[in-house]
Amino acid sequence: MIIMVETSVSSKNIKSFLRKEMKEYIKKIGYITKDEKNDLREWVESGNSVNSNPYYYSDEYGNPMDYISAMRVAEEQFEQMNSMQEPVPEEQQGLDDETEPPF
Image 1 (cartoon, rainbow, N blue to C red):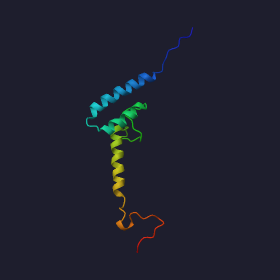
Image 2 (image 1 turned 60 degrees about the horizontal axis):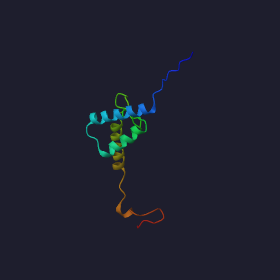
Image 3 (image 1 turned 90 degrees about the vertical axis):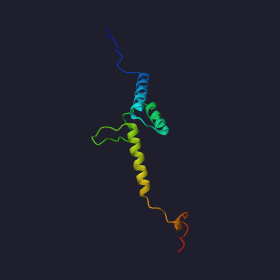
Image 4 (image 1 turned 135 degrees about the vertical axis):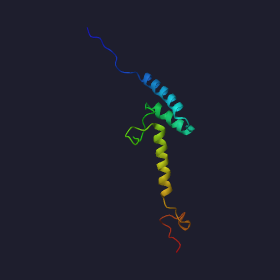
């Protein structure tokens, strides 16, 4: 006689666990914006843990960053990159490649 034991965890149980984990995480992290909360909710509803991130960012010890920390780092990097771009001189603003610059 063969007895089958179900070893897999149901999708419903996983989602329930991830939602509970998210609620605890939000309490623990403290301040979180509405946009961050919405992004976090989407991340978790897609089957991901709050203790992971889509960029595979790690902290200084090599441990995976949590979702909000990684998103904040990514936002900071984006802002730094944008601030490093050279501004376009006024006389060149609005000119396309086909228009000759006024000399």
